[in-house]
Length: 122
Ligand code: AMP
Image: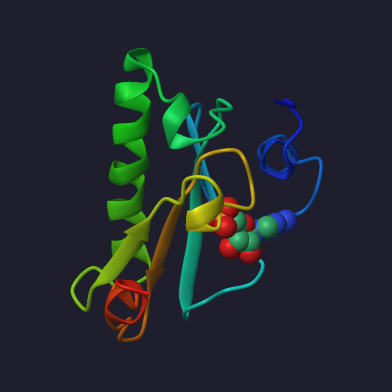
């Protein structure tokens, strides 16, 4: 797996992005193609390609993604109204960028998680 994901370039500020949070471990920036009024991607600075590649040593780092999500949800004013956190893994989930990232979505009623009723039993 290449070390050069587009998110690596954003973390390193080699390409522009609307970064809303960055520390030594995590970077968060607005999604370039937002699916909700608030759509932020929360990314570990360390490259982990998929959820399948998370190691025991990454437990604290992955937990930190959720702590940053909580901070940003409050900052964006959606902590009370509600928000959704999603991490896609591999093809069936539609993962496009192979550098794990938590989607923070909010600012509108997001409806049901997925249209399971329509897909189960097909
Ligand atoms: P996923 O399908 O879970 O891998 O999500 C990848 C997300 O990255 C999509 O929502 C894209 O819109 C977003 N994305 C791709 N390139 C960029 C970029 N340069 N800046 C911000 N978001 C991006």
